[in-house]
Image 1: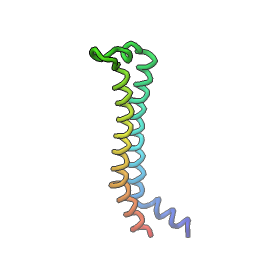
Image 2: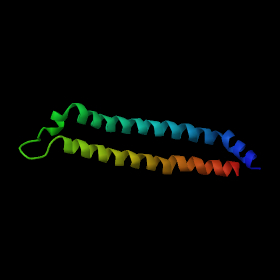
Image 3: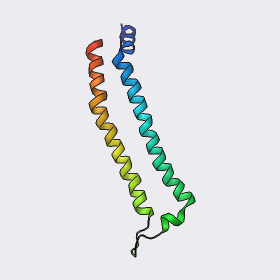
Image 4: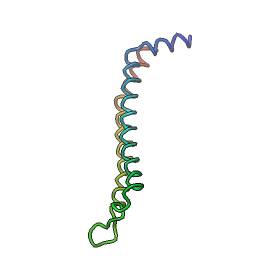
Length: 101
């Protein structure tokens, strides 16, 4: 009985749409995060002068807001993913359960 259920779920068009959409969206978000994070690390490694340059006459350097941007960007794309997962992905999952069970 379990094998039959798995086969029905995997053959369901909504399941195939869910897997394809979630996978491509997840990889897109992953690539965005990798670009931002490794871009920051690359700046640390190769352009210390930029990150150490002061902004105005104060003590703040460019490294502080750029580092803060990396943290805020992480929180924002996590929120975007969670919102889409709660709306679109959960709706597809509910439709799959309704059709298969």
